[in-house]
Image (cartoon, rainbow, N blue to C red; front, side, top):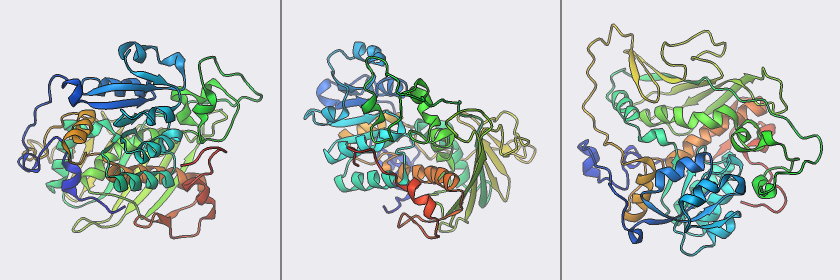
Length: 433
């Protein structure tokens, strides 16, 4: 559970330490390698995010197995990879001897069971964010990756983008001076969903029992599945779990943040639905000082177009973004651009010389690390701490209490008994981690 150092999480399996130190551009691997050289990969969940992930790995991996509980959505993947074995039950895929690695693109509530089973079977794992549904699951996956010495990567694809790398360089060059305040926001909101009031037959081709997995049983309703599972606490974690790993990754990287010492949350539900997921939310995280870097107060907002719970504060051009506030100035960043503030103070600003090498690609980095060795930038040790932080925001909101958190031990240091059920939930009968 120990923190990894800055050099570890900047280094990729495809890059040597010398290349990173010199800020060298590393060319892409080019055409697909011969089949014998490519990682024998199983993809679990092949529609939605799964389809995007398949596009990310298809030139660098040998897709030997596909898995999905809803055969109504598997047509395109099975057509593209006709030689891949197909199963609807992930356990049969993990049992395959020729599978070296597993890519998990299922809903959040099944991430941990699949990833844990894969790692116990000695398979390398790529898992979509926010890694798991609960904090306890997150800790379990980190421990398994370390114990079995496996190559892991969480699906925060924006981490590989050049814009994030340039922002990290500016922040770490002390351009803004000491930074004690960061604000992060996303303008997305959940959609209203409905509960089925009586037993409803799932569509043919969907194995609904497998889809539910360890989650509590509830009657089938279309608004629970596919993209909309995110808006139910039984299956997902709302906008916070959906988007915070992408946006909070930037300050975690640039400021070497890991786990917060305290978390407090507030929010409200302004729509009419049965899912009761906050569409407007604020989470305040406090992090301890790190070496010469001061303590940081980071606030997450969603459902608003700027860093303000009431939606009254906006920054032109950034309806979602990250704002670093330093003693010498500020920087606002989105996925693809950044701006120094106040603009008149930074007129003619020249960024520092690049020191972080260009990524070979988020998926390719993981696959190359499996073949050639070396860590990945979003391995579970780094990304697990980020995911844990995000998930703690929902715990604080649901418990309606401020949490004091011991990141090293992974436990609350203040008495909040109502929070325990959200740190680790009971699985449906027949399911274990």
